[in-house]
Image 1 (cartoon, rainbow, N blue to C red):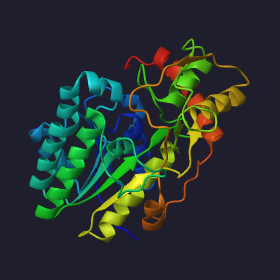
Image 2: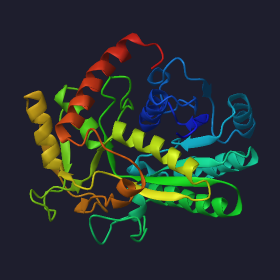
Image 3: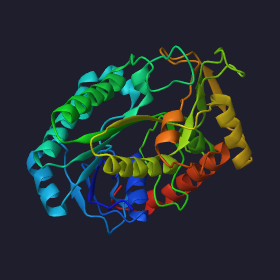
Image 4: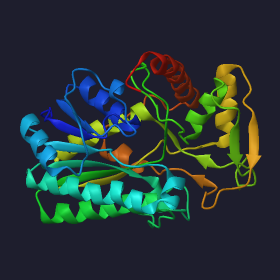
Length: 338
């Protein structure tokens, strides 16, 4: 059995990071979190998890955490994730996602922390020529967000070649849903993820859902994406960490998706079925750079890890997101921390 080493989760109070913390805690790993709470929420974390409010570029704070917690692995989620914003403010993304990650990696190497798991993205592929897209497909990002993540992948590859550090880059497709036990979920104001937007609309928090493009080469004309439940994704991180410990001289790059997709229309129809309602849909022009379909080839992760997704069901994803959205309304009313 793999020895459970202390793990530092950066951005652990955010959407995906908080679910990774829950997955680690559930599996018995010692965990600590650093988050600046710009987009994260303290309530998303168990009280038992040591929490440090600060920035990942703070070398002194990182050295303190590594020493106090005996950190032996880093799971890195901290960063900015809104693609349109990255186009409008590229320097923010190259700072938050690239320059600050460089500082984090430097602190990791200085402290002789040997394992690093990185939250990457399918946006590094840009507009793939084929679908499903495999890990060896050309990486041609079409926005600063994708480039900022690809630069980190390159840094990790080079650093792992020069230092006793192995890493795993996990390229996410479309992350959705919430913890089935209602402990965490997507809480960011103004989020752009389709499932989040749709359940907000279903609960009257938005007036409508915009559908960007109805003339794609897909069965219903709307874009098709590979939606992965956030809790399945979180478990994949724990298994990836175990893989790094088992083979400390080897690094990994893997897609995180289910290997099949749903269209925008499919998602909205599913929300209507789950809620027994009808979301208003407003048809808008296509957004520049949106591919017809973006679906993962998940052959590698299924072969490399003993990963058995438990929530590969669109209505389950939506039901969990909806339950969280209802709970979030109560949290916002009752919590002074939001």
